Image (tube, rainbow, N blue to C red; front, side, top):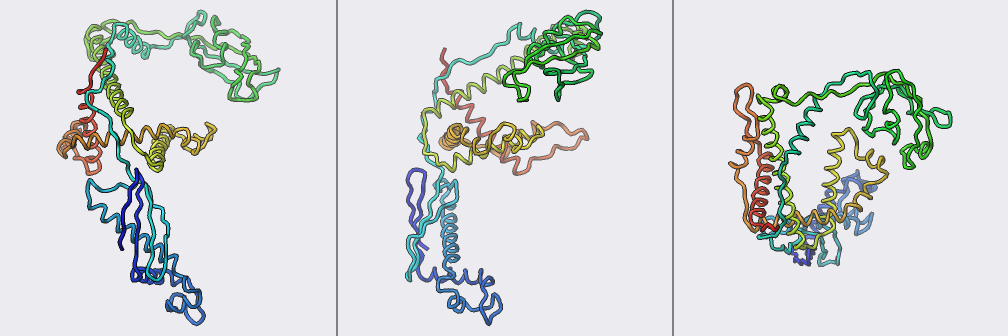
Amino acid sequence: MKYTVKKEKSEVTLEFKADAAEWKEAESKAYSQTKGKYAVPGFRKGHAPKHVIEQYYGAGVFADDAMDIIIQSGWDKFLDENEKKGEEALVPVDRPSANIVSMDDKGVKFTLKFPVTPEVNLGEYKGIKIPKIEYNVSEEDVDAELKRIAERGAKIEEKDGAAENGDIVNLDYSGSVDGVKFDGGTAEKYNLTLGSNTFIPGFEDQLVGVKKGDEKEVKVTFPEQYHAENLAGKEAVFACKVNSVSAKVVPEMNDEWAKDVSEFDNLAAYRDSVRKRLQEANDRRAKTEKENAVINAVVDASSADIPEAMVQSYISDMLRDLEMRLYYQGMRLEDYFKYMGTTEEDYRKENHDKAVRGALTRLCLEEMIKREKIEATDEEAEKKYMDSMPEPEDGKEKRKPDERELSYLKNEIVMDKLLDMLVSSAVTEG
């Protein structure tokens, strides 16, 4: 079977010509594959000769199945020959659509159209100008981090005095609207941290100053956009009884505290380690932002005729990522869409432009890797794997990575090399 290839932007058209002998062979295959579904008087199903079935059901009875066979044969022929072209091979991004041009005694003509990975008009990617990006750790940052760590280890102790913002009030409450209690408005021995803004606006403010044993009516108005429509915008009264008031007792930050919460002997050494950790985090943040700045600049200066099938494939990847994140939160994707009042179709429409940008970014990265001939060896991938694995407790040797893990790590290494090259060649302004 002969065919010609025509490529226009990111769409390819294959024009096939199958002669009479090839068509006859396809009809014979169609007969062999489908004869069992034809009933002919005087024959058991599947045993009637081809010409008898054609006489009984019509001369073209096997035409549709034969056409499917010959189209698949043509597609397989193209894929086999295309694969042998290496880097020059076309990369289909969707199944082809078929169109029958003609069918007669001399054979058949048909076309297959399909989108392929497009060529990228890649902008300049070396010497990109980016703003100066750095985040230095201040003493205030270190103070705030030490305070956060200290508060994390705070003890909760009951107090006799009046409740202040930051204190924990344990209370029983019962809410009503127009004197009628409503679902979800009652609780016992509930711990509420004043100032946390977890309750209806104004609720916590009215509990500032209460003491253990106090009873107090708290009057609030539900927000107009409240999730329970029957309560939205309505005034409510909560009858509250205070069971206890507790305060967080934050430990004093001194040498003894530093010994308790770290491996250091004094606060100064611990403070230095915290400063170092914060700076390392800031450096990683700056590195990521520099990489993103360079990549965005390259993508802004590049273009490609991205087929819709590639865009939809990118959105499907986004959906799979979302589904996985929701899974770890104990939620299904279908339930998420119901909760958000949307659908997968809406999600695809809303994220279309983002997917176009994402697909173009991916194409630009692949093109830069190709031009720079960036590669990663099995040895590099194995070393990366071994360095990341903890030492086995039983003293055995570390498990070596399998082929799938090696392939994943090699892709990571290649991308790291590309990003290092882009950032190192960038020109910092300001």
